[in-house]
Image 1 (tube, chains in turn yellow, brown):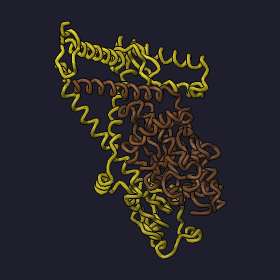
Image 2: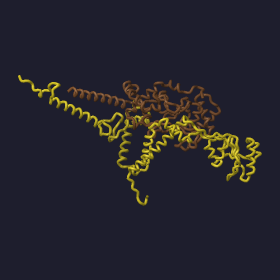
Image 3: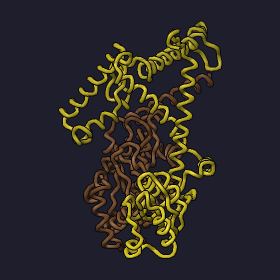
Length: 299
Length: 256
């Protein structure tokens, strides 16, 4: 009996066998094809026949997010997925598909080129996108403290003042000057004010923040008032309407916030600046890569 | 030959593991988020993967255990008290995905505490007026009374008028000052303060200079499955201390 041809069978593991090689090659190729096929039809960004688990539907390969679907259910019907009826789910699904179809149609029609509202919304959306990028980066405490130090003048309480604005007719400058002198010696009482013929302008009443006093008094009078100490009286100040004498009961000047107190505002300002820089940078980049031609008469 | 067999076996094992993980991710994503806590297998899978993501993206502000920081206005996530929504996984997921005042279109953007001690308290709504210093003091007394803390009765009564009138506070915080979690307006009667220690000074700071903390939107930075995993992990944190945590953080009666 003739000995078996080693090439006819797979032979021993230690021996070279062309048949075995072909079998492994075929298995490898088949496995590779299966994996490639699976990836091709399920990977994101490619045409797929399977709805990814994070989405509820694909409309022309555009995904409709599952979490948006759940949110919509909650917003429209106030229910979560477990308690939603079939009709409710269907309604939300139809609404979302309809919206997506119309958005896609809008892109085909290029409505952004003609509809000012769409254009404004796009500009706004891109600006928000830039801002969202900026706020995701969390600044370190060191960066915030440096920012606070370089902008410390922004972080202070609003000053508070309690004062009275006494007025005299434009021709009564002598009476106004006398009243100013008298008020330096004694606090204003109804009797004293009656004797001095001083009347309250009514512009300020009680305790006011600096910004409110500035609006009520006007800038020139406020500038004088904010330098007055508690119990101090201004000189007679001639204005177009009358002669004013200011009596400061209490002047609580703005106090700087320490870093801990101001941190929230510092963080907000830091982010606002970061957003501003990023937007400027993005605009510069867009201008740089754009091909903008301007008509001669419009230059 | 051995090498070839080893390679083939490794490839098969890897494919099986990937397929298994992919299947679990799919189950997590397709599950009703609010029912995940009832499914221990899905819950365990989400927790094991959510914790590292939380440490990487959230712990910087919220702390490793989600303890928050009232000095910085960072909310505690472990106390069962929710400013936005009711603390369900779906609510947490929405915040993680789109953020709070994050400049994302779908973020929670409605509630911004005006700065009443400034000329223009709200950049968004010019109709909101500034308040006088006395009004702010009265409002603080009103809040103290609402929290059943010792308060100046006359000032609190005046504060109630400001709250329901010129201050427009009722508009967000509701007429009973119990807030509105649908817009993120805090309950002012419960002694839990996001900023500061609940003292008169810190309340006056919040009223006078406003509050507008933010949480970034992670929708474009973390995969949907990762966001859900983080949401489940935060949900589990909130059950760590639960309502006992609220008691710990609350200001002691009569304090301030």
